Length: 326
Image (cartoon, rainbow, N blue to C red; front, side, top):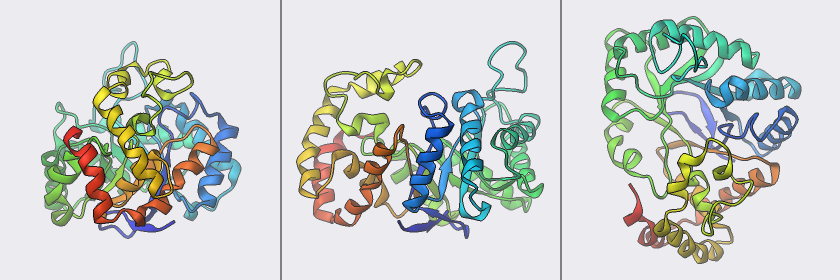
């Protein structure tokens, strides 16, 4: 495992990391989470991603309980959470969901700290942009989290380049803690934002990336070519919105064409796809998802393929996938 700086910060994150979206609480209980976190740490992973909204807050509870049981020294691991959607989805939810106003944010961090059983969270993200709250208000609130010692670094997730730049400029103008990282979706079929839209930000602001969905929610494993298999992420209740993308005929055909390339390199299509994201020097860490240890270990095998992605191999991959990417 290699480690990379998170943007221009001094924080070192493992090039592959482990996230909890969909899996924790839904598919993975505290005992299984403990085993998976331990296996990831043994492989050199030091960053574990979460969010307030995952499983209605229960994902944070499961991860927090697992970390407590493992008794890791606090300096050895990095955890994150994200704010925007809130937890109160019913009843009187004013200032409790779909917002990044100061009242919500400064209450949200306290809730996450309590659920995870931590004194501070390393990385906190604004999970989506909020068009109804002035960015200046959001920047001040996020900076205050850090000033108060409740978080160490803050960033954004799925923000446009213009929104990130506006937040950075406000922080710079007022000498506040600046956004350090963005968490975008990035995989073979979703490239434009990372490779084009953010291009100026890497040099101008030192933006780091903690990318998610390297397997396009499982499409790049090849298991959806015959439909949605039982027990897969796409078969879970509430994941129906993924079906259109997972069952895309052209993209599934492209995945089949990647298989011989992966075999030549000694790996699977999934490992090839993860290695493709990992080979981008702008990516600080690639967030993996796994519901069992065997799946995690298989995904970590992408490390062996990353140095094999020569310009010639990348050109072959692009010939198959680039025209289908957005």
